[in-house]
Image (cartoon, rainbow, N blue to C red; front, side):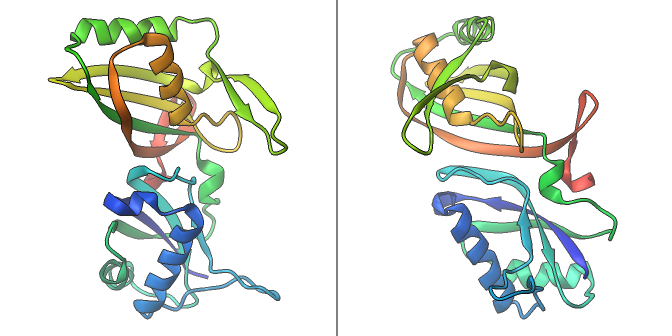
Length: 231
């Protein structure tokens, strides 16, 4: 069946849509657009829409990816036009293209993602202070975080191997933290747990919560990262 890759943004109030509701929102948009959506076979068929990597509730996505299967071949520009007009507020189609039959699954290609966080500072912080805080954080031999398991048991793990890059800068009273993190089926690191650990260790005067953005999702090619748009 013909497959199409979507690059889209999840913005504004839509950042609070859960992963399951995001799937439903796209399914309904495809139906409203009058596109022949493909479904799995069996007693309980599901729409053939596959997302690259789940996005945490509350995090905006600037360049997210998903594959969509139809039951009939259509020009990509026609699919893009119809779907773009049918998406609800907060979901914005950026680009859409056809995917070759032999292309692998989108989710299997995901290896890393880039993020940005912004928060207000309660006192002035120099650029040097922010940079030194990141350097000290990354120089720690381990960055241990605690997480509850499915049965409520506490698990401790070292997330440092999954932090591939990290920086911070200050714009007036706003601190901006950017990071590149391991993402995918193994070694996945959540941006929220990195920020919580950084906030605790650095003791920078961050006021309130960070606003979170995922700025890109990538596959790995050796030591290089490659946009999922080109996989």
